[in-house]
Image 1 (cartoon, chains in turn yellow, blue):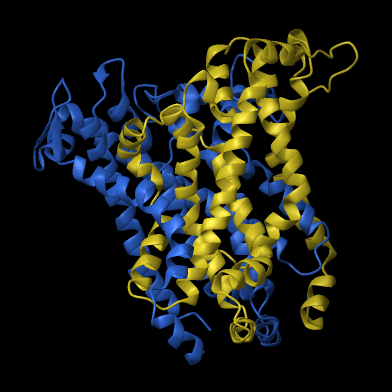
Image 2 (cartoon, rainbow over the protein chains, first blue to last red; image 1 turned 90 degrees about the vertical axis):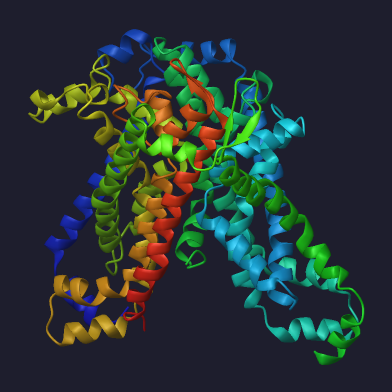
Length: 284
Length: 311
C-alpha cells in the first residue's frame, strides 16, 4: 500500500468508525436469521414463542425437536446419501476435468477448439434445461431413484467450470518441465499423473469448492431423479420433512439446524481456501 | 519438441483419447445430448398413450398465444424479469458498496467481515427459504416485534402471503443470501487495481469519492458485467426458493411464478393440469433462448464496450 493513500485515510478516524459501523450492521443482518433458528432449535415450544430472541436457559432448554427429527425421518441416511453423491461426483469432476483440461491445452489435434468451446458453453448454459431428456435417459438406463443418476448428472454439471479453471492453470506450467520429461522418454501418461497433477493441486482445491457446494445444496435433480425415501439427499429430505411437519416448530427448527450446522462448520474451517479461490482471479 | 512429436504423429494418438474421452463422453451424454434432445422434443406433441407426433411450432404457438397457456407464460416471464431487476438494483449495488468498504486500505477485521457476510451464500436456497418463512411468519411474530422495537411495527404485514408483496419479498430473501458473490468478485477486482493509478488521482486533488467514481469504477466494469450475466443466468434458472416457500403452484394466485416453477409444473403437472413432456421441453427451450439472448448481449455488447477500459 502506498504511503499517500495511507496518510489520507489514516487521518480520518471518524470515517473509519462509520465504515466499521456499516460493515458490522451488515454482518449482523447476514448472521441474525441463522442465529435465531439455531438458538430456537434448542428451546421448548413455549419458549420459542414467548421469547424468540432469548438464548436457551436451563429452564427452556430442550432437544425434543432433534429427537422428533431423528425419530420421524431418516436424517442420517439422507446425510449419508448427500455425502456419497458429493464425494464421488467431486472425485470424478476433478479427475476427468484435469484430464480433459490437459488434453485440450497440451495437444494439438483436429476439433480441439470446437470441443473446448462446447465445454465452455456448459459454464453458462444450465444443465437443468435438459431435464426432460435427462429423466427420459435415466428411465431408459433404469437409473431413476438411484444415486448413480445423481452422480452422473453432477459430473456433467461440474466438468465445464473444472476444465476452464484447470486449463488456465495448466497453461502456466513451464514448458521446460514437460520437455525435460519427454527427452527422458517418460510416457505422456506418467507426465500427467506424476508431474502435472501434483502441480495443479491448489487449483483443484478451488475447483473442489465450486463443485461441491452446488451439488450438496441442489434440490432440483434429487426431486426429479431420486425422490424415493432410500435415495433422498439432505436438501430434499429437509424440504420434504418441513413440508410434512410444518406445524411442529421444534422439529422444523431442529431439521433446519441439522442442515445448517455441518455446512457452517466446514465453511469456517475452509473459508480461507474458498475466499482465496474466489478472489485469486481463477474465475475471471 | 519436434522430435518427440514426430514419433507420436506416426501412430494414433491414444493418449489424447485416454485423457479426453471419459470427461467428454459424460459431458456429451448427460449434458449436450439432453439439451439438444430437449430442443428437438419441443417440436413434438404427445397423446395420452405417449405416442409422439411431429407438430412443428404448434407448442410454441400454444405457449405464446393460446390464452390458457400464454397467460401463465407471460406472467412467469414478467415475474422473472422483476425478480432479476430487483437483484440488479439491490443485490449488486449492495455488493459493490460492501466491496468498496472492504477494499479500503488498512481496514481491520476485513477478513472476518468478508467471511461472515459470505456465509449465507454457502447454505442451500431451500434452507434459506424456510428460515425466512419462519422469521416472517406472523404466527411467530419475530419480525413484527423487531419492527415494533424500532417503531416501524405498523408496516408489518404477512409479506409472503400477499399477492402484491410476495415476489418482492422472495427476491429480497434471495438478495440477502447471494449478496456475498458480487461482493467477493468486485472486491477481488478492486484489489487488482494498481496503486499508482489511484495515487495519481489523489495527487491530482480528487477526493476518495471521486477516485472511486472516476478511476476505480470504470476499471472494474468488466467484473460488474460478469456479475450481471451470472445474476441473469442464475435468476432465469431459479426454482428452489419459490418451490420451497410457495410450492410448485407459486402462490398466491401465481404471483411468485417464475420460469423455473412454470417449467416444473408444465413437465410434471399439478392439481389442475396433467404434466407433458413435450410442453415441458418447449418451456425449457424458451428458457434456453432467454439465457442465450442474455449471454449473447453480454458477449457482444458489454464485452466489446468494456475493452476500451482495459489496461
